[in-house]
Length: 323
Image (cartoon, rainbow, N blue to C red; front, side, top):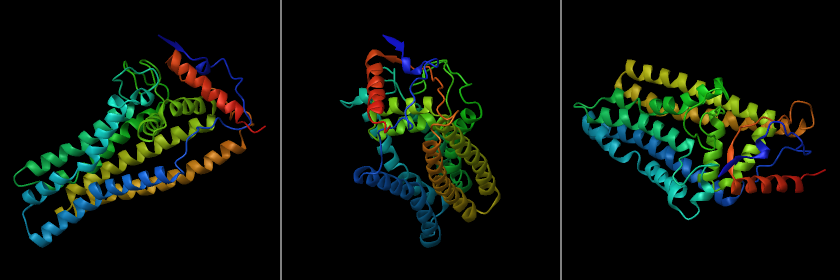
């Protein structure tokens, strides 16, 4: 049985604390910070450092042909990321606490949006990698497209949903969004799914994140602007990287294709952290101003148990408001 939560009713805007509704989640603890550092270090090593070191050392040192060189690289890339995706699927579908990590209103095997998005992106990554290394002779230009194709597959949904927020509707569930409901900018579901599943925030974070998004005009702006930035910059630069990879010699094209996407990601991440931190401070300072605390409904249908969690989150927020 499902019903619409009263907290998603746009006619109700009495929830007006003296500060934004807290998310009740932080990465500033040793275990989470260490896990994030280890994850990004290993991903960077697997899909950034390793392919570059192997390609040039084998090409210039061992003097193997491109076919053998690319075959060795392809056999090693994807081991850690594959393990992380398998572990994430375990958390979401099989583990004892999987019901706590699923999207709001989702069934036993309801996938979240990040699972679909990262699946498409990984397909875009491995398709040119496998095809390029399977040719005889191996195609360095094709393999150099792997990361740019990942960028396109991952960033285009962010760009489209950022341009038309809450306008696009699909006939299937997207994370906690029911079918035929206007989709929020893509960063909304990314944050919800990654923190709830991979970060252990569970359904409590999904509810707190929904409440914060629904009640804060500045948070909605943050989500849309970051979706537009990552979507537009990633899509445009990926096209540039592919063009350069195909119009330059093998050594240069390969380095561009496997190196510059990481530079884009690091610069974009640093800018995002700086800008979001500044906007959150502005949200805190201007919360009492007209137009900042402005309710917008996501129209998320919930089970009775999920409504109880939403009520508990709101009660917690009310109890912890500094008057």
